[in-house]
Amino acid sequence: MSSTYGTIFKIATFGESHGPAIGVVIDGCPAGLAFDLDFIQHELDRRKPGQSRITTQRREADEFEVLSGVFEGQTQGTPIALIIRNTDQRSKDYGHIAQQFRPSHADYTYQTKYGSRDYRGGGRSSARETAARVAAGAVAKLLLAQLGVHIQAYVSQVGTMKLNKTYSELNLALAEENAVRCPDPAMAEEMFQYIDETRKRGDSIGGVVDCVVTGVPAGWGEPVFDKLHAELGKAMLSINAVKGFEYGSGFAGVEEYGSMHNDELYTDEHGQVRTKTNKSGGIQGGISNGEAIYFRTAFKPVATIMQDQDSVDVNGQPVTVSGKGRHDPCVVPRAVPIVEAMAALVLADMYLRNRTTQVEPVKVPEML
Image (cartoon, rainbow, N blue to C red):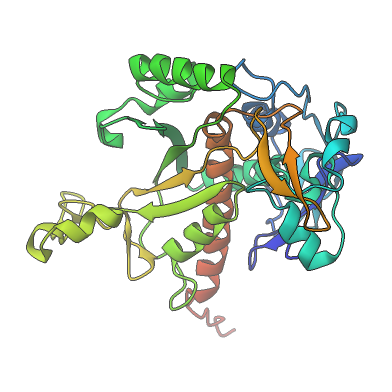
């Protein structure tokens, strides 16, 4: 199982949904970075369960502990180990599926691949694992903040309810002022009611998270196979329940002629090369061009619903699976910080990789 990501800024997550703890080891973080404990906890608080009635009611404080790699408030350039204890497991809620496969879950595929599975909350396949990613992503954000890079995600769609505005038309700071994390207050209220009604019916609904990254200079990205947008796509598609990724104009771009779609270049008053439009999404040829990077990530409806569904057991016999436990009726409100975290991990790694490709001038010592 691949539980690692990154080339220079690397992470390895560990733990299961109903195990003693989950956590992450971060390797490759530069020394001397101020380790802001409050900021990391704040990021975890944004993802943790039990935030409102439209999220799972599992009660986890998600308080993290630092086991290594930090001394006197600074990173040491050595592996950073962070751990989050699980405190509110209810494994008995999953006893009924020990011999059954839940529709659209990883139960059958894990059993087939490994010959066994941890059925308690999905074990390693549970979205509980993403708390470790958010902790690591917070550290990556601290590094990127020193470079002036800012990452902001928000909910733009729930089911058929779409926010038909571009990021430039919105005050993205408003996303954190409501439970849905939609920056349009009126739409956020409608989305909240939509999700709540879905919850009351024992059903679930999907949605879309948009993300905007500013402050990335031109030149980040590693062609040919590690293009910046390819790495972002891989990172987003590695998140539980993600079914789609597009950046820039995305699929809508196929409806335009090249004369409409091309981003014409110009030099601004500061002598910087810019583009008049940004349908490239801040990336060209797999390398950042200095414009805002923006992309969209689609999440499916949560697979566990509070309704009976047809399935089979471990012997292939037909069974009826009943939904139990505590689950999100819509994952996107809590997915916002996860999307940001994965974007931060990609960009921190790309920043460090880019430094290795820069040719430093050779300093010739003066003759005595």
